[in-house]
Every structure is written in structure tokens, then in C-alpha cells.
Length: 260
Figure 1 (cartoon, rainbow, N blue to C red):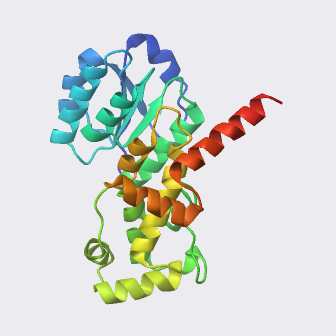
Figure 2 (figure 1 turned 60 degrees about the horizontal axis):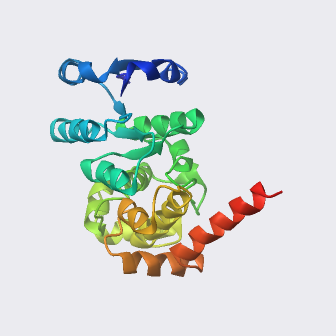
């Protein structure tokens, strides 16, 4: 499989930090912001990592250019002290993931590898355990028995949870009729395709709610729920509590741990 490098765009003072990225089999190239336009035109990449430093508007502008010219390239956006407006602006401009600095390098490496696997179409069964919110449960026979077209569709769902999704698109991805896709999906997953999408969005939301930078409306937007009331209703139905109550419980857990 042809692999293009991961390209990091950041300020020179941050070069040493990104030299610490260690992903076997992957090449990471560091470039400063002034080189970006030349890099975008002449360098192939499978993922951009944009560390905007204190130049948020510049980074958002660059992100918009990437999405216009190369919408297929995932972008990870990093910011040192992002406000809620910055988070939303990055997602709306097309960022695939957002990290606040200082960043946990292990978490960043894991996210980079996951996005690279999806970008390169590495549709192997082991990736069923590498979704945004952890494992994807499989019922009948385990992952080794799941048809390849169903694996491909499950991973498509993971990659596009934030998008508008419907049964027609899933059936097309699986190369099946809607009826046969729905029946096959429920056989292996135990739920309908759209029920699965809802559950995965809620699991992803639970992860995002741990981020102090993101309020509940931002989380709903990020996971593909356009209507806040729908998000709240679905979250409560699956978890037994509202998103606000869940976020409050996380804060209580953190306070309890730090007070010991």
C-alpha cells in the first residue's frame, strides 16, 4: 500500500515537540506556516496536523483552503487555548478532530493512526475495535465471521458519524438492497443500522463531554445531531441521564479523585 507522509504545520518553536511523534511505518514531516502553500501544491500527504498556535484566523483560513482543494485529506486541528467559538469554527471549516494543547502524544498518535487507516481504506477486521468511542460490538460468530461488505459499511459509519446518514447510503456502501442490508446488519449487530448510528454517536458524545472546552451544544453538533432536543432525548434514552447530568457527573468524579 502506498503511504504518503503525515504533514505537520506549526511554528518553528514547536518542532521539537512533534519530533516526539513515534508511529512505526509512518513518516512525519514538519513544516512552518510560511511553507504551507508550497507544501499543499507539491507534497502528497495522507493527513494534515495544523497547530495554529495563537494564529487562529490564519489556521482556519488554511483549513478552508485544504477542504476546498483536498476534501479527502483528514485534518487534525490543535490550539493552545481555544474558546468555544474556536472549536466550532474548526469543526465547521472541516477539521476531523480537535485537540487542546498541551496534548497527550499517545492519544494524538492513536488518533492519527486511526484516521490514516480509514483514509487508506485499510478495511480489516481488527479496526472494528478502533472507532471514535472504542469497540464496535459484533454478535454472531465474532469479527472473523462478519462479511467484508458489512465491515466496510461499519467503518464508513464510524468515519461519517458527524454527517447526515441514511439507509440508502449504507446499502450502497455494502452493495446490497436496503432490505438485505438491514437484515444482514441486524443479524450481526443486534440492532438496526440507524439504531447503531445513534448508539455510536452517543458513545462518541460521552467521550467528547470529558473535554472541558466543549459545551453540550458543541458536542451535539460534532457528533452529527443537528437538533439539540433530539440529541438530549437520544442520549437520555441510551444512558439514562441527560448530557448535562452526565457532564456534571464527570466533574464530580474528577473533583472526588483530586481531593483524595
